[in-house]
Image (cartoon, rainbow, N blue to C red; front, top):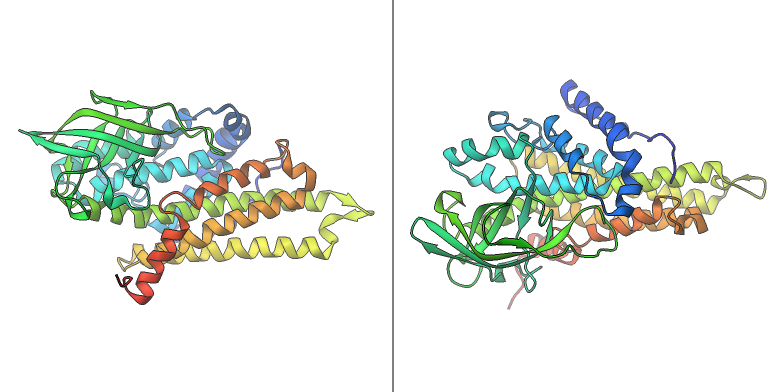
Amino acid sequence: MSDRAPQWVERRLPTEESSQLVDLVRDIVQREIAPRAAQEEEAGHFPREVFTLLSESGLLGLPYDSEHGGGDQPYEVYLQVLEELSAARLTVGLGVSVHSLACHALAGYGTKDQRTEHLPEMLSGGLLGAYCLSEPASGSDAASLRTKAVRDGDDWVITGTKAWITHGGIADFYTVLARTGAEGARGITAFLVPGDAAGLSAAVPEKKMGMKGSPTAQLHFDGVRVPDARRIGDEGQGFAVALSALDSGRLGIAACAIGVAQAALNEALGYATGREQFGRPIADFQGLRFMLADMATRIEAGRALYLEAARLRDAGRPFSRQAAMAKLFCTDAAMQVTVDAVQVLGGYGYTQDFPVERLMREAKVLQIVEGTNQIQRMVIARHLAGPESR
């Protein structure tokens, strides 16, 4: 793996505080994340100690209220922090995005008492969260989920299986969507489930192409009993809660994707300017120069797209269409940029001695999570032309 110093992106941040925040993130990246990323990913090691440090540093609750332990930061800043973390190690950047997604339901739809009781630990108390929507038979068609929650006095009893859960088996809390009523979107309710709840177990983590340090596993709910006080929002409101969270989560994935792409471009640039063939650096050859130019353009365009969507969100304006566009474009860009980075390095790019092959494998999953890119195209088209006729 390359041991070059990181090439930092020049950022235009809204305040001096946010500039200092990014400086803090870069310090943590240099000291605690980047030096061990390749080795720990190969070994499948999840860096829980890094997440503890991020929590202690106030970086796990950035877009939430300081009243409950958050950082009071706009999404415009939070997403750029995700990008910095993901450029160093996607397991960390994506993990922070998933944790933020898991906090969204309670922060946005919980009662005052629920937020006061749970959010401080979730945002800055060292806890790690996960988000449970997908199931073995319901991925893109999330409204058809089958996990059930049945009322029993003051409790709910949850039974079923969730799939593709990032942090599955290691999270301290899970935001769980379960069916409490009739079929379809209106019969779903959200719950906050402790990670050590009786009857909750995790399967062996999936053996993935990339992100081997981030556990992804099925979760089995075998009569898990949850007090009604841990129901988030009204009965039947869960799908609206989920969609609201996913709009924000898609922006997180977009930022993660641009971080991965930027890391790949940095590696390709370093190699192309240092590698000589035919008596001169390969960066002198027009074919390769144009490839680097296209890579940089995709990254800049993707960054501008996710930041524009973030600014709409920060202004309280609709941003669902722009979030889908950002997720679609940025993740496709990351896939193309990482493939091109491998090509720039030639045979070396295909080896584990350089990080671009790992970045390419990691980029692929970003086209799938938080709604596949085919789903994003459906979302965008509905905004443009209305729902499909039946």
